Amino acid sequence: MERIGFIGAGSMAEAMVAGLIKGNVFQAEQIIVSNRSNSDRLDELAAKYGIKTTHDKEQLVKDASIIVLAMKPKDVKAALDGVQTLIKDHLIVSVLAGISIQTIMAILGKKVSIVRAMPNTSAAIRKSATAIAGSDSVTMKQMKKCVSLFEAIGICKIVEENQLDAVTGLSGSGPAYIYYLVESMEKAAVEVGLDPFVARDLIVQTLLGASEMIAVSEKHPSQLRKEVTSPNGTTEAGISILKEKQVQEAIISCIRRATERSEELKAMFSEELVTNKK
Image (tube, rainbow, N blue to C red; front, side):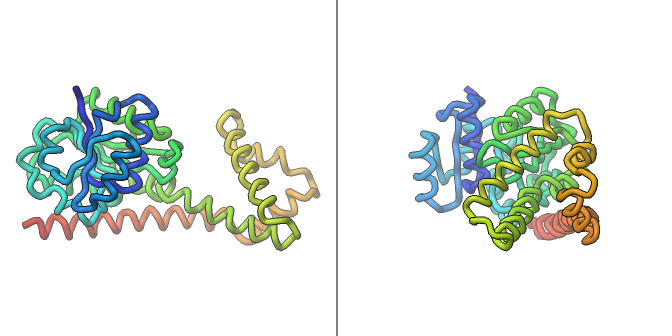
């Protein structure tokens, strides 16, 4: 029976566990989760999902054929110390931001099948937008398995690894941009006299409706916007302020800067983890 093991028991690991079980990709008895020392967290996950938990990462690697690296990025070297010789024909799936496939291989000291993934926090409600990239050793069968893993928590797209920094800047950090927009809309709603609770419901439904329109329509978002914008109407008045304040340019700059920061962190982690490997 195929088993999947998670090294790391944080929110992303839990989101994936929940999605895998709800999506019938893995049964609870096929899932093992470990962390370094937090027994309370492991007990919580075991009680909630019926999965196996352990502090013994060596045994986890022996028992599972798929290993998900879900610890904090800075802890990846410590987490892999002691299991390098046990990793052979495993599929390694990394959800670690800023840690390249090459860095993981350097830590392991060998060429193995690694898929690097960039999900986002909406994985917690099975609505993640995830992109994945595989090493040269990853087979088509393994890549399909990874797609099924991440489709259990949302959508999954296959990209080249050098595109993952852009994915990080776009959809990895993307939920925060939307939350920032909602914050602004809520403040505006109160200023123009709406009850904050009423405003929240209206904003949420507006976002859901607009997202669904983009998803089901063959029209470009710019065309959908134009169809809402009557000449000299209220929407045009609002859009004129967004253009005046160069909001589109700000959003583009935001995603570019987040992408650059992902590249910077990747270089920093690579230098720190590989240079200090010994």
